[in-house]
Image (tube, rainbow, N blue to C red):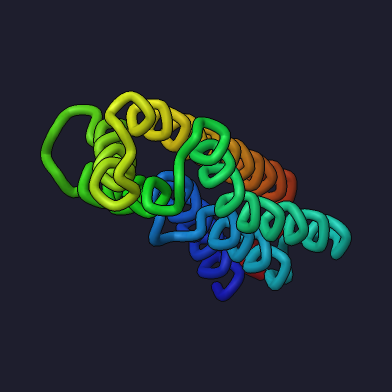
Length: 170
């Protein structure tokens, strides 16, 4: 029974990690990795420790890159720290606001406002920086989502490969 609960917890953590790939308040891959770790602690599913270590390294790397990629996108397109902060604030507002494409429009508007309002950039420079910020956010989110999809694939592979041991009630 505890194994089934751990498998259910693993699935939930991986799904939350996938959602966290797009939400700045949730570190997607590390949460999804906790799902892999939960599978490791079951008696019915045997995941080698090297898989747990490799997936941990991937999750930590993605966690670090999550801070580097959007900032690099902003800087590459001439933006500043104000633009990067504006991107994050815009993303949160864009997610919460009931507007279509808010997850894209919010970061762009946030970076633009950050550049114009706090960095005193002209509108052309601010628009370029905002574009870089959004591209960095999208690239980072896509990479995190792909990693979480990989963790989900590993989850299903392990659960189905060990289904007989997981659901034997002897």
